[in-house]
Image (cartoon, rainbow, N blue to C red; front, side, top):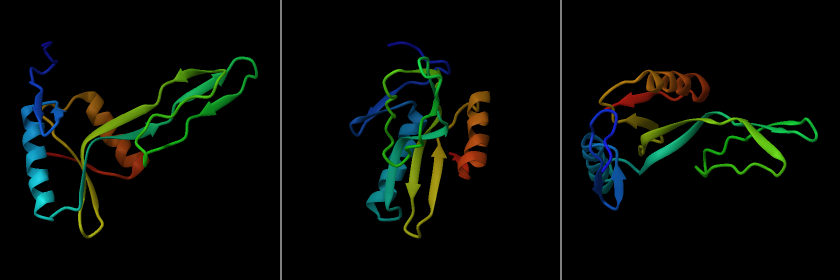
Length: 135
């Protein structure tokens, strides 16, 4: 098994891999809240597109921005003849929790706050108007 940057160990629980023991413990707590009907839905590793991919067609000189597709949480396929100039800038939230009152909260199980994480957290607030909470 290869080592990670921060010496965390991946954990397999409930038919899914978790990036760390801490993330797995948070998942267990959210699953318990889901079973007790304190939350209505739980999504793990949900992808938010912060900046779309930019594509270029060499023959026509046309540029194309990939659309935001957050609802399906799937990658968008580029059309034929276009090359990727800049990949999409994405943030993968550890947990997206839906509460019975209709509110949605994004949680991230953090041990080390890297510069990349802090940058994406700021962009989530500016671009998506969503605050990311660390647990």
